[in-house]
Length: 514
Image 1 (cartoon, rainbow, N blue to C red):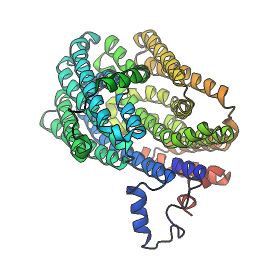
Image 2 (tube, one colour; image 1 turned 180 degrees about the vertical axis):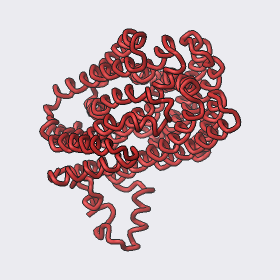
Image 3 (tube, rainbow, N blue to C red; image 1 turned 60 degrees about the vertical axis):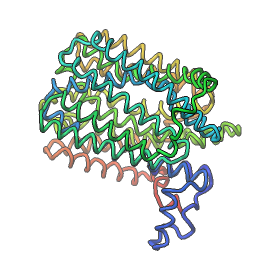
Image 4 (cartoon, rainbow, N blue to C red; image 1 turned 180 degrees about the horizontal axis):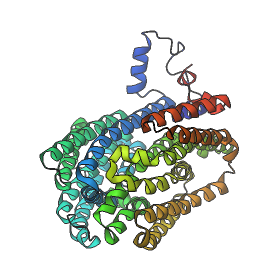
């Protein structure tokens, strides 16, 4: 969280928004902190505030939901959890058709033309309802032909309802983002995931099955969506009465590139599960779901980081400040690698005990695909950041090529590798597809900005390797995996300090406000 705030404040030059007294313990800091977290004052403060809330909301809500996932995996076992995981992948795959970039376009238009927000909100809402109707139809009637897994058919209706309400919740967030009120999104996400966890666990206690877990999960989404709309009720007055056919055409033709990018992106994430469900068993689905879930959580972090620096980079691009764009790119990539590399190395070292700790002994065979998928973390971290910067240069077609290349490669490799090698083959297919996709983004960015990365991360690589060796040695005496992870974190930080890694100075909270 501090990484992105530092970049924003350092590049904008506006680093005094909390006052001259800094963090001196003065009680007068309380209203200043409150003002920083809940009010929009300067451009950089607003972006830093939004970054804080989005990151906090994501980490807390995902951590809460992780409790339910861990409990569900232990109660349902590999087969039951596999069916549930497969149902969620259905929701993720078809979910792209329920939005088609509509939420993002609403945010953009509400920012650029605030006086027409109600027209755009109403028009987008009607289009979304049409898209949801089509999506639910596809899920219900096409879904049964895409799998041989028993038990999935009875979940399709529940998954469709889940998909609809989750998409509507995302629509509501588009208004909150347009008004730079990410604290609403953060709070609503925490409430929703809290409800999902409570109701999901309660459902499992009543009847331990994938169907009842889906009921609890979906009920949590429904209540969370209703709460979100209630909070933003003043912004949605006239939601059904301000529809404009003229604006509908504008929104529709603006949305198709985003829809295509979303389709390819969703295919890259969810096609593995679909192919596994066709060729293998519910047991394999459960193993892959356990391997994929923690890595998917990590994928969210660079997206938040990239979104936070996007406004600053966009301004530099518009002003033609190539050197500042280059410095920001190199700094952002270096800071992201300072997190990605130790996660990769440490995760590979403790992959087996960590998988067992999270999901139980029944999921030990998920450790190998989990370790393979961890190799995608540096690729996704760099690719996400570079993708946002390419978007600032109006290179949307590059996304379509990159995601399309990755999606096609992933599908072909899944069809080749899953039948003989199972979930481990699927993990390797994902790794190779990510190399294609993010490699294309890297090459495209290099043509625009001649940036470099390796000279800036030598010390990070050395510290990560040193940490990995230390964790491997300490694991030989069989301490608990939580202790090993904590020990590795201390070793990694210590090695960075010993090497006088300059990036450490950039994540000191005090330097951001003094």
